[in-house]
View (cartoon, rainbow, N blue to C red):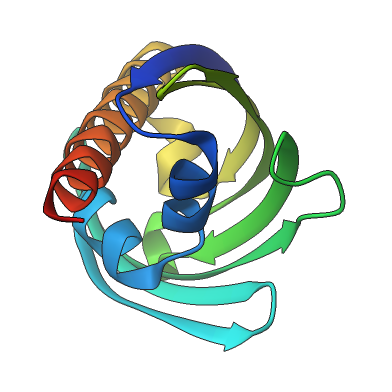
Length: 151
C-alpha cells in the first residue's frame, strides 16, 4: 500500500522539523496514541489503539528516523504488532520545503500489513490508512501552529 500527500503548515521549517521529533507533539497528532517515548537518539516506541473495520487492536511499535538530510528531508521506518489483529511495517520519506514563514510538508509512504488486517480487504485497509494519515497531519499541523503561536 502506498500513500502520498502534502500539507501546508503555518510555521518555519526548523520548527516543523523539531515538532516531527517531539514525542509530545507526536502523541497529540497520532490517532489513538496512548503512549510514545524516545528510546534512542533517533528512535521512538509507541502504543496505539486503532479500529480498522471490525478489528480493534492495540499496537506496540517502534520508529527509527534517518535525519542525515535534515531538515530538508528525512526518512523513517517502523513496525508494529497488534497480536492476533496482525502487524504493520513500512517507511516514509518526508520533505520539508520552506516557503517564507510557512512550510510545505510532502510525504511518500509505503506499508505492508499481515494477519487479520490483511484479510479485511485492500479497499477498507487503504481507506482507513488514508483517513488515519489525513487525521495525523491535520492534528500535527494544528499542534505545530498552536505551539508556534505561543512562542
